[in-house]
Image (tube, rainbow, N blue to C red; front, side):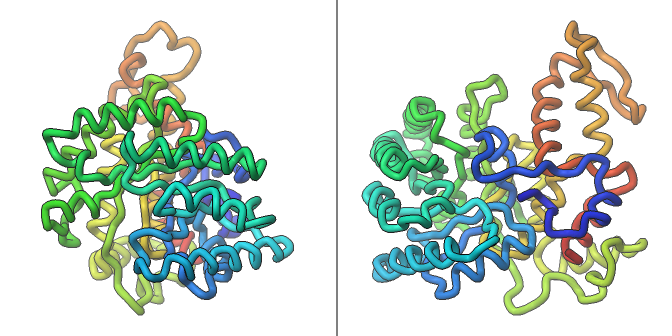
Length: 388
């Protein structure tokens, strides 16, 4: 699999200075954590889930979470588990089918071992489990259960803890809760692929819901938690983890995301303003601003609950030619001693030591999302993805 792998090779060559790399579910954790991209959530109750998974893979989805937790009713759990077992068996029996990275969001630690056993041969399609409302007290049991399931199945299984508990939000308990989470994920570091932020639960604790023209960063109580999580768990000194962006809740039901004329060719031919207006009309303008703010605040990837959000996340994750030029310049071996120089684009100063960690992260993102050609921007990447 690869990002933008659903579009024609000749179109990718026109878009990318350096194309996204190919990878598999067995690639290194470092690469997979960066490659998660827009992780699409789906209720585990969907009756044609196997078909849905392959359809989304054909539209560029790289990672999916099949949810047994908040997205389904309490009374549906048993049926949803049975459905998952059937759907994995269906997928495993389809020759040549290449699903995205698949994760199951469970409710309890006991579900991990139980489902791993029940999936049988279908376990080869599972990349891991999403662990809800993660704290030190709750998290250890989940991670121990994951270790047992991995040993029993012989399949490498990752954890993606969701940081969404009230203890993390509340000021009086935040520091202690963060310290406990840090101890737990550090102890099980080899099993933790990424940390996910449950911003909907944070808002729920105060009866809040951000409107579509506002981002999570406009809700100060939420922004403060994101900042503290990145501060403690997202450091670039080798101790941190990949932290993914919060979910965007808004979409237009039963409508195409963009006007049909925007799908005619892989390039807009100057119609950028038309696309911008379509984005605003479909409540995507706020999403675009939030994706940019995610990256500016140290987050990579994003939780998505609607397929129309996937391509904007991926298009804005591609490294621009300017960013790539700066990062390569900063990391040249002859710059190891430090110093400062004018960028190749002659519009900024690159200071080697302070910008080194940024440059390393930028090249990591470039590896999985690619580097755009000098004259290619978000509009061209998005419309090419839609045409694919």
